[in-house]
Length: 315
Image: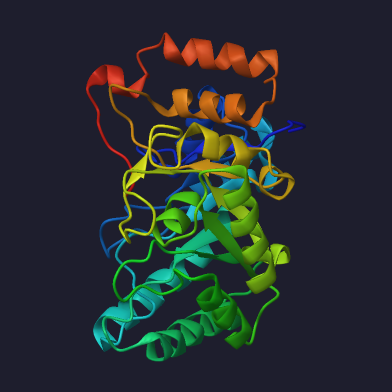
């Protein structure tokens, strides 16, 4: 895809993972994100070779290339001091890296978990061990992207210094990157509401972590104010970061060159396509006419999620 922006949403895999590229395309996504399985349970079925091939073929047909991104399920905690939870998490993580490889997905985003009161150093030891072990045992080209957290109690990786320390502690860095989440950063205390604050936050990220590690950006507004330490996403421009903040974020050269993934609600105020359109608008980029036509077709179709009364979202 030769687009000026790579923007998309987290799409459903209902009916099979191979349906996801179709859903992304009909919404006018130029990038998209999925779970490869049910994100709310420990059990999963192996990914069938036919289903994986069909997914890869559709990604190629629509021209997504490396712009299809996978996200770890909710339950795994790779920093847990609990042996049972840690071992379940480790196996789930290993399986997700394998599945991403089978699907031809380059980036797997992971939450860094919670040390559950054991302290950052103890959590870091568990997390680093898990990442090193999986990278060394799964021979594929999948990058593990460490996502910044929202400042929740006992969370790992809410501060840029924590992410830098985790990266520095890893033995295998050639398959590591970072996913920067705007809502998480804001909730953790990094201001993103004005040009000066956006520039300062991103300068600090570069100084402490380094832009070389940044590979994907989650574009989410926040339902909670600066530094509140709660992970509750809002429609772009309708939360505490606001349109002015996102206008500055989306016009920053470092941010806009990466895949931009929305994990925003679906409700009566706005649905997936509405948030995608808002990102293009705030970025100040004129979308190609063929994307506009796809947006129009989706918004007048029965597939427009909120028209069916569906509500949901991240955080």
